[in-house]
Image 1 (spheres, rainbow, N blue to C red):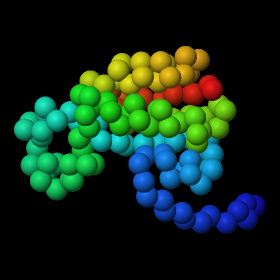
Image 2: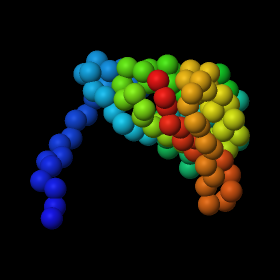
Image 3: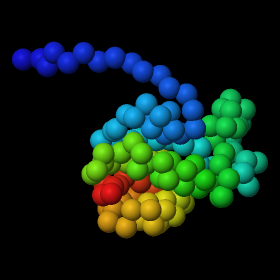
Length: 129
């Protein structure tokens, strides 16, 4: 038998998780593909990336880690007590993103997941607040 839950859409605009926090919404899972490319890598990107995606969606300060730091800082306002967070990452950012998570949430359990080519592509963490 199908569940009769009605799904609705809600679109919010703002700085990462702030609009969700402002609405007092709590989530069990946050999935994010934030801008994570360091500005120093801009010239080495393929034309299909740098010519068609806005810079705001691609590049972040702090060697591409600034967005992770900001989102992780905002997590306590929106994540349930034991929630999960998943980030897409650059192939060399796994350890750094894990460390940012553990520094903010020492009891968390982050893992780096690889893509089909064996490159680090995601960090997943059970966040225990």
